Image 1 (spheres, rainbow, N blue to C red):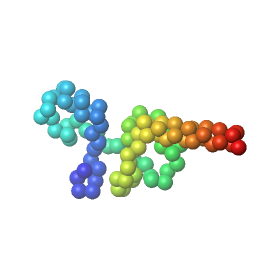
Image 2 (image 1 turned 45 degrees about the vertical axis):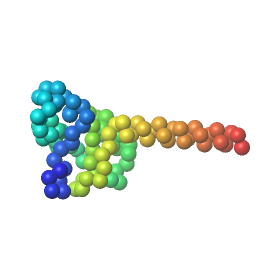
Image 3 (image 1 turned 90 degrees about the horizontal axis):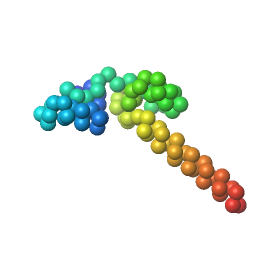
Image 4 (image 1 turned 90 degrees about the vertical axis):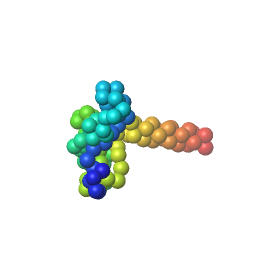
Length: 96
C-alpha cells in the first residue's frame, strides 16, 4: 500500500520464488504482483468466478478502496460449504 492505494500483492508463491532466485535481501516491491484486476463488492460471484477462470489471475479487489481479496481457492471453499449445507438440508428433510 502507498497511502490508501494498493500497489501490489505478495503471494506466498511470489515470496518463495523471490527468495529462491534472489535471496533474503530481495525487496517486496521486486517480487510482488502489480496491476491486479478490480471487482465491485456487489458483483455477482458467478461473474467473478468466470473472470478468475479466464484471466488466469489470482486476486480481485473492490474498486476504489481495498475491502477484501478473492481468489479461486476462496470460491472453491465457498462452493464446498454450500454443497455440504445443501446435502445436510436434504438429509434433514428425509429424516423428518
